[in-house]
Length: 260
Image (tube, rainbow, N blue to C red; front, side, top):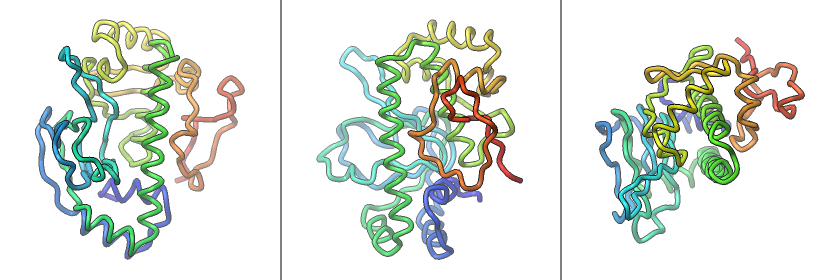
């Protein structure tokens, strides 16, 4: 399925042919953005629902001292908040990290789709709940996880999110996020981020080179992160799980094998 947005929603609810056709029409065209171009800025009036079709974007906020905090990564298939139009103005910005293609769905069209297609409504609401779960996981990371745990946890999350929409190839995924971008997301300096990535590489758990993430030892990476995928709320009816390692708390995460 070429449309990652439809593929993502199909993993959250059962979509019929009519649902898919409506979504294809709504997101069939996208505007191109260059890297570091804003989709919308803090203080702007909220507009349509943005749907990332290709590339990567992020939610961010600039502090008074000029530093940036990235609050979420958006990859192909992700959409912005359903209810943000209720705000008078944006309280954060959304920016393309890489060249990206982004569709816009008007609030009226989105409301109509969700009213006339309950499967789409369910998938969109579950998607928003997952986004909120990711935000809570990031808060826990920033408050309680060590630097190496924080980075390992994010790598597990991004790998699984990419896998869910078909962006991974075996144990590899394209991850075009610079060390500066990762540092801005995890509350670290780029120098510290470099040290942590080197430390993770030396553990034999993962390697991030030239925009590509390789999972070298999934079990070890999960153990370092203390990772539990429950907040991603993935459907598992099409997967079969390997025997969980007791050291991972029984999650079996990232050792799954998808049926052919």
